[in-house]
Structure formats: C-alpha cells, structure tokens
Amino acid sequence: MLRCSLCGRRAVYDRHYAGVLLCDRCLVKSVERRFRRAIAEHKLIAPSERIAVAVSGGKDSVVCLHMLAEHLRLRNCELAAITIDEGIKGYRDRSLPIAKENAELLGVRHLVVNFEDAFGATLDRMVRLAKRRKTGLNPCTYCGVMRRSLLNQAARELGADKLATAHNLDDEVQAIMLNYVRADLSRLHRLGPIYSPREGFVPRIKPLREIPEKEVALYALLRELRVHLAVCPYAGGIHIEIRDFLNNLEANHPNSKFMILRMFDRLKPQVVRGVPEFEMRRCEVCGEPTSTNVCKSCELLKKLGLEKQRKTLIY
Amino acid sequence: MARITVTVRVFGQRGTRRLRLQARARVTDLLRSLGYNPEVVATRRDGKIVAEGERLANGDLVEIIPIVTGG
Ligand code: SF4
Ligand SMILES: [Zn+2]
Ligand SMILES: [Zn+2]
Image (cartoon, rainbow over all chains, first blue to last red; front, side):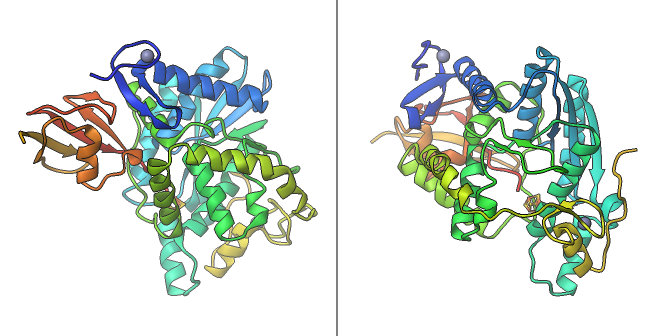
C-alpha cells in the first residue's frame, strides 16, 4: 500500500509535479489551502462583498460553489449562484438540477437564466440556424459569447461586486495555449486570476486557477459532492487537441502546466502593454457594454435572424 | 511470469471487462493498456480511490472515472 508523504495514511493521489503522494485528508486540505491562498494573494474578495458564482452543475463549478460558501460564511459576504441554461438537450438539462440541488443544500440563492428567454432560441436551435445559414461558426462560438454576456448581465443586475467562475489550472493553461495558437492578444491579456475591465462589467475572479483539474475532480469525489460528470455534445475541435496535447505533455513532463501558467503570469505585464486602449460604449441593440457599436452577442444573433428578447434578466 | 486478472468498469458505461495483467502491475499500467492518460481519469479499487502507482492484486475490481468533462 502506498502511503501519504505527509501523514502516512493510505495515499489516494500521486502529485507527480511535486513528487509527493497524498491521502484523502491531505489532498482535500491542500486544495482548500490553494483556494484560500489564491483569494488572499490576488485580493479576489474583500470583506462584505456580494459575490456571484457561475454554477453549471459540473464538478468544477460545484466544488467552487461549496468552497466559496464555506469561505464566505465566515466573512460576512453574500453569495448567489447563477446557472446559464443554454438549451443543450441531453446535457444542460441534466446538470441544471444538480446545480440547483447544491445551491439548496448550501442555502445559497440560485438564479437560472436561459438562452431561450433572453435570445428567443436555445443553443440547439441556434446551431441548426447556423448550419442552415452557413455561418461557418461552431456551437462554442455562440455558446461562449452569449453565456459570458448573460453571466455578466445577471451578476450586474444582482448587484454583485465580483463574478466567480470555476476555471481550473487546466482550463487556464488551455486558454493560454489557444490564444497563442490563434495569436489573439486581446483575449490573451484578459486571462489571469482577476479581470476587471470597465464599467458595465462585473470583475471576474478565478479562485480555482491554480488547482489541476484532476485534483478538483478528486476533491469532489472524496467529499462525495453531487456533480454532473459528462461531456457536452458540441465539444470538439482545436480545444480538444490542445487539451490532449497538454495532458500528454504533463504525463511525460510533470509540472508543465504550472510552468506554462507561471511563464504567462510573468509575461503578462508586457502583454497588457501591447493591447491598445479602447473606448467603452453601450450596444445600440441591447444596451450591454461593448467596445464596438453592436455587441458580439447581437452581431451573432443578427446573422441568425434573431434578436435579444429581454433587456432585463432579473425582475 | 505469473499473471493476475482484474475486472474493469468505466463510469458511465455499461458492463465490465476482465483484463489479464502482469503480476504486480500498477494502476497506471492498467490505464495505459486501455489507452487512458492518468491525467484524465480517477480510479477506484473496490470502491476506494487509489493512487495510480498502487499495485493491483488478482481479483481486484477497478473503476475508471473519466474526469475531464464539460466544454
Ligand atoms: S462545449 Fe461549446 S457548446 Fe458545449 S458548453 Fe462548452 S462552449 Fe458551450
Ligand atoms: Zn496525509
Ligand atoms: Zn447587444
């Protein structure tokens, strides 16, 4: 039997990048410590702030919700969970009840915002329209842009000071690599533990950014949290290739993911300087903040023959 | 060399399969032989999470849980 390098109990995890074996207790403690350290080190949350957290029901967001609820309870902060229901049959309809169940369990206010109400169509329908109209765009483009916009709007309407998302180490490193591959400086420079753009945008925080995906998953399993473990039917393309590449790299060269993250964090001040300043405006169609005349969501919707249906999400 | 037989189940899939492995094979050998990168799965043996360096024994029931999810 393999034993924990710290306490000698039965090991459940080989943390190759640190050269240690960990038992269930030491792993759970370590994950929680990293979560708290990220919050303290990058000043992600100030006392008495109102925090919104995006919860899909997947393992990362459920873990994030539980850790935030436990952390904030002692700090006089208010927490609310937001689930965006994009309308992905067989996937989101299964994770949504799990998001709800976890919020209820913790006594956290839970809000569901769906694509159909906001945009007049589910993501499934947008995908069909996109195919018919030959837009050449993949489902993740619609999903990503519109979900981000709704999350921001819902958090703002809730009066949240911060919007927490459950991006883990793997997600962040994949995003870094993807933006390198696409040479997308303007997206690259937004990555980091906290991104506070301008008025109209709620600052986004990522408290799980230094926790590897596998450790988040083990944390959920060890604490027996109810999570939805499934893959979106639309997942595919270059994202998957980059993810597989990074996982192979990490298996053969432990610590690679952390190294990529650390290097990016060191380069970031220079990266930020290379991004031109832009003026903030209101979208002519929906009024949401944007750097152009029409926001990206409205631009995508227009090409599908759709338009934003609700200007306010929360009544 | 002596060999062992373990039963493998993949979370979310139907059925189980039996696998013959070298005696003293580790969880990681089993994962590799099935084409899984240990980075993307958690493994339970007889219901308990195990480290990938753990050695398997004849008759073990191993459950593989793919943990890379979402989108
Ligand atoms: S894989 Fe694409 S379509 Fe599916 S949830 Fe993620 S971004 Fe949306
Ligand atoms: Zn221990
Ligand atoms: Zn708009």
